[in-house]
Length: 144
Image 1 (cartoon, rainbow, N blue to C red):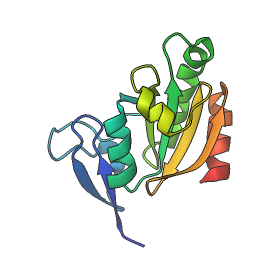
Image 2: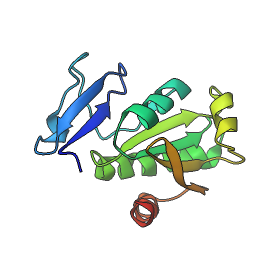
Image 3: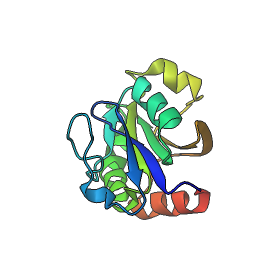
Image 4: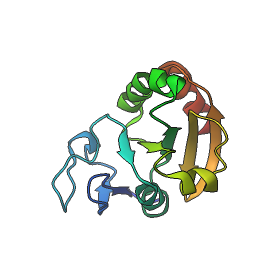
């Protein structure tokens, strides 16, 4: 097991090496200077999801949603609460299925909201439907 992680910056895509002993909450990107973790799920495009999956070592949680989806909007604050607790051990992302239809199709998304747990470039778990933050964290704990 390595004593460092590779963390991909959601702002610029740079790969940052993070020693395990370092306080990740205070860590900044070596390229753009932004905080690597701010407790808020990043709204990203398909390219950033791919980069997080393939270049980073953290588990990646992706909320696939759309702006017109009522349950998606209802779950958004709960997902944000879960991110505040789950970071920096995991990377929390939001993927708009309307703007990233090819990636949604690639993942076989049939309904939204759908959450995916990705590790080492592969999907390891998924769940559909709106959930509370405690349900999200429980699901992540079961599938970690």
